[in-house]
Image (cartoon, rainbow, N blue to C red; front, side, top):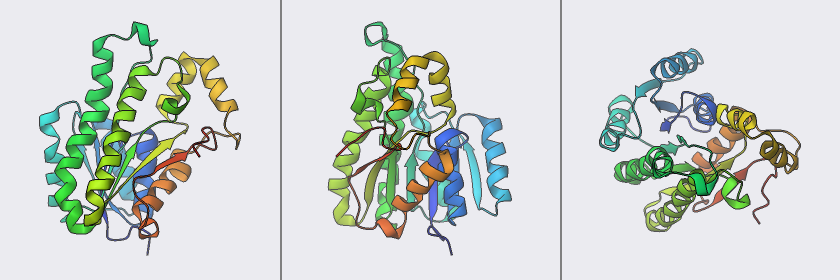
Length: 251
């Protein structure tokens, strides 16, 4: 039996990149997974790929910036799987701009696709996670620790996510619900786009990686998420886990 056998999960942004890596690792660990993404074609393709692995997988097309549509994600997971054990908030869109050149709509984009969906889904999932003594895994970024140029709106939303995650870990811990953060560095489409847009900044960050390689979305990031969602991490909550090959030394 896999580490997550019998558990049901929601993974936002799961059609591609790091979130797809998490969804794939979850399926291989035995979890049932609802993939949520705004990209219908990619979402259906990922659903088919993971179903072919033998997983119980469903895809739901949702624009996460549509706040009113978010509670239906939890309802859909419960209708499909009958339970909810794991919530993974990994989706995020942002624009890379110097802070002084960042318009309001760029900041809104980061919060509307990252912070607000994370908060609303946590709130909607909370009573169901209490029932299963479940787990929340939210995604933040080492870019906030290192103050990487052009990442102002991105790190603002991610640090807001870290802040509410710590409060949730404190408030929800007595009811058995664990809340943790992963800060990844992986070969995702977003990182590749950043490499093309800011090659010097990318090279600087690569040179900080102690293990001298960029992470794999499934094998490195997905495996860490499986651990945090599993019973092996039953005594871990309120933590930020840097899954970045030693890029950020957050002791």
